[in-house]
Length: 322
Length: 116
Image (cartoon, rainbow over all chains, first blue to last red; front, side, top):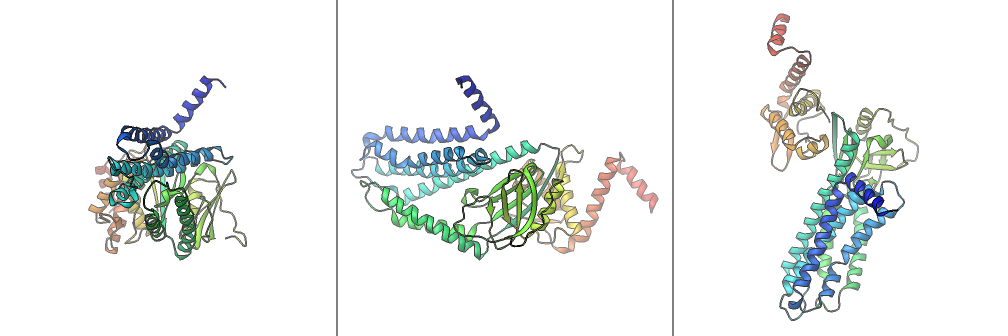
């Protein structure tokens, strides 16, 4: 493949995903600014610049690896998921690291021994601020990418929108509590194992506090918003950077039906946003995908899908379906 | 409830959104206390400006059909406004139909007067 063909394909891909260049620009800017900040202040730091750069920028490598892995996986709509979900989560990691690096530089200028930012309120505040800034920006850009894609697919003067909301019940809290707890435990073990030997103090209490706050917020506060438009069905969750949310274009839907669903722990299926035991809307796509979301008015949602996309019929419910 | 607009219609978009809510209240789909979608979400899904949705909500608030509260969004007002909501909805539908048929408001009023 010639370089001109590659350039043409890249230009086409960027034109189809106008949000992607924004993501790339933000990612590159953060890494470039971080490296430049460390290099500029190197002479006034108590450790080698390389140590700091590699410690704080390792998540950037993980985020890029996550994105490339999703793009490489032989799954339907992998580019869509990579752009609308993986990159926003990656931006949250970038926010944490950029803020952590800033805090480390701030606390250690002209110091004799290195102090990690987890031990001071300024450091913790900067890290939390960075993570939330990255999370909000990533979520906004991910939503923008999804909205522009779906609107491009629909393109009509007649526009419709139907809304519903669902909040979690005890069964979801139990399932999510188990899953989140196990994940946090593994992450803390990993953080302890990779913590640099030259950094005084253990970040464990802070990690435990952060994990507790995060788990508590998820378990108590998450809820999903469901919208059905003439373009697509979209499910958004308030927390988790919309990781449980999904969107399916109406033109891809083969059937819609109301089912009964139940949350299950340790199920990492982003196409199932099951927040409570009870009625749920299930969508099957022409490519064989199955998506579901809990909602009390699932039967009404089925009729709205039928009205907006004639030809989509609810399947007969089979015995044993959950 | 289902919001439907036509961007090619001569009726303003905020008026179409307000008409959807009036119809919802009149038909009983929207009950007193029902929460409407946030203006930002509705604007995004209908691909219109957020201020257009806010204008529709403000108009409905001025008619006494909605309560707009900071942080709580738009809520359908209590049941005593239901009869006027139904009348409002019918009048808006009538005006829309007359507009589609090329009748002016004066001609419509004359027609109504003749029917009494």
